[in-house]
Amino acid sequence: MNTRDRVIATLLGVSSLMIAGIKIDEGYTSIPTIPTKGDVPTLGHGTTIYPNGMPVKMTDKPITREKADYYLRHHVSKIEKQFKQSIPNVELSQAEYDVYIDFVYQFGIGTFNKSSIRSSLIKGNYVQACKSLLKYRFTAGRDCSIRSNNCYGVYTRQLKRYDKCIGENQ
Image (cartoon, rainbow, N blue to C red; front, top):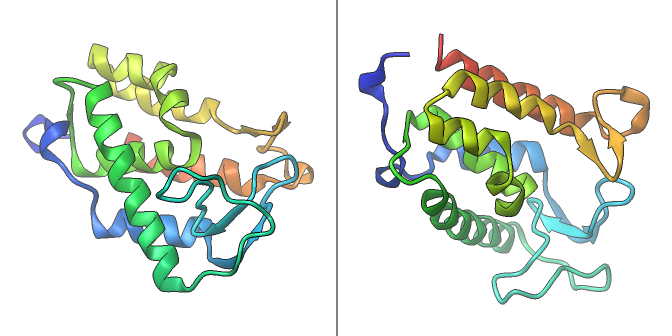
């Protein structure tokens, strides 16, 4: 990675590739579903909380793809602000920025703020931050790196993030 390719994260914004990636990884459902046993209800492209702050419930009405896209973009906009505040003066490439926003979309800003990913970024240890992504392979108490736990997609998404991240740091 050429350090000239990094800029202060507050100057970056999500790429259209990152939004498309979330849509692919999360899929689309017009009706509320529980994607992984023990998880919370989602709809659209992984929406768990509506823009008005109300949680998605299994009894909610179906939504269109357009509404799902709106919910996704609204949520990403919200977490972008939180993410930028959580890593003051940290420089990232566009690819790294997208990886970490995608992580926060899936795991939440609270998880990111308590993570070794964040502390490594603040210390400027970019490779360690990438490696720390691989710690997040659990959902509902199950290790998703084990295929028979029926949550393998959580793990493969982490592997994709790791590959993108480490590729920026070689």
